[in-house]
Length: 139
Image 1 (cartoon, one colour):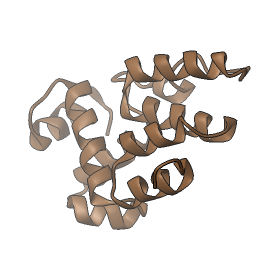
Image 2 (tube, helix red, strand yellow; image 1 turned 30 degrees about the horizontal axis):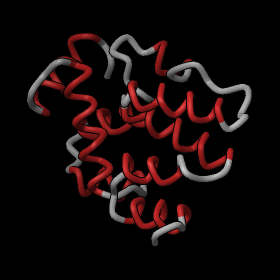
Image 3 (cartoon, helix red, strand yellow; image 1 turned 135 degrees about the vertical axis):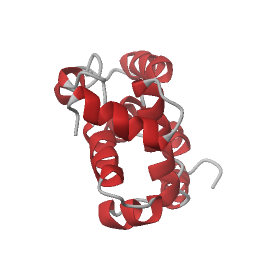
């Protein structure tokens, strides 16, 4: 896969490793770089998202999103749309495996989203996340 960013990104996606997928996409063309930036933002990886924006500007890309999407900014906890979907399905009693099947993503990607939700809600367990989400009106 050395030198083949497309194949590397596809393989990382198959393995459920979105961060690594985005790193591979960052080596690609403008469309791939934009996809990488969106993944970094969805993961809440702010520092690398900012670095990605710099690399994109250096390579001549214009009209680069300045930060999280409007829906993420509007969410009181800063959760992305996908993180909200994962949280809502968890609240309904879905396991990570069932969430992955329902959203057609890998269980590893679900794990990444759950970790981001826990961090953003400042809790340490899924039960605490569900309780915090209910208390704040997120779900």
